[in-house]
Image (cartoon, rainbow, N blue to C red):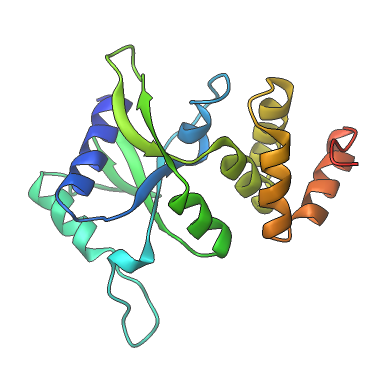
Length: 185
């Protein structure tokens, strides 16, 4: 039961073609750039192009669920499917920011659980931060603060992402709440 084995299952899904485009997002993506924080799940951003849309407009993750069931993973948790002790939440892209983040995701050697590095796709730091700013929850704003205090994000690249996705207002709000000088001004 390790995060590493959970990520290995996700990479197998990509190798099998169950998902064409994926990237680790959320707190686990942030682990590649900043000091660890507590998280209880693994968020995986996936392309909606990988799934058939129904007449109702709903997007069913049946291909992922079927593939995971064939691997023996059928237990559900509040936020996803349990894979080697970790709840995994597959999040279809829902905005132009998500689509850009997925398209520009990078392949990293992820060193989790002290094992040898594992190749997996992960969001770039500026997309992790922009998504956190967009969501605006306290835990997301704390993550943004950690990226800034640890100099773990390229400020100019972040500014570009925030501008392209109309998030400068949300960024200013974050700076005010955090008592930070806006580095863009």
